[in-house]
Length: 345
Image (cartoon, rainbow, N blue to C red):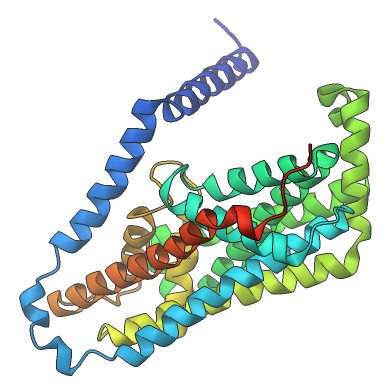
């Protein structure tokens, strides 16, 4: 009989093969269509399950001021996204202006929501980096990757913190206990790994990438690790971005007749945005809102049918604000030739 090591290797090879096939399938026209259809079905299910007759008299109760303020606050996060990315680009000695980073961030937001899925914005930013700085592609791609990783680590740390603040509730739900463990482990190990690799890249990178590529990566990581002030500013901006987003959703909840505690909104949206990393929908549409509703249900914030209807309305409002700002990114894309300098020859 095969020993445990042989079985472990076989399982790992099988897992790798399955993931490669799944990734290849998602990149085909059929895979992209499936993600569009899945997103559309989830959003349609949210809208279909709302009993709109309950909101026939909503015009006299619905508070438009919180919706407008929530939409404005959500929009403020995009310049902060651009500033964080610009700081990381500067740490890699890329001579791009904040105007350039701001325009490309808005374009990425459009692609993120409508075309390429959850990582569409990163793909768009990588395209413009490679187009406008062809001699520094590696550094630009590294800054874009670090921007994504930094935002995700901060999001996971906020999820872990909110779960700790709700520890009494967490102890009664196995799902929340598992979520706390995952968020804590991933955020802590991610931060430690980032710090260690930036100081001294591990030797196995040389064997995996080759001496030339490993030397380039080591130089990129060295610059990222030595740029302490830009990195600290980028880290701080990540927390501000997510907190502003949580405030926006908290205001939307109040306008939808669901006055949730801010800590519950923060936890629900931390989980919701983390789930959008999974490449199962376009831009996380439907998945984000479903994860938010599921987390609120675990927290006991949707105890009645009436509260459920208000929560569904909140999910639709969150989706609408997201799509609205993505359309602004589409308008910026149409004006890209005027807003961006011509590409280098």
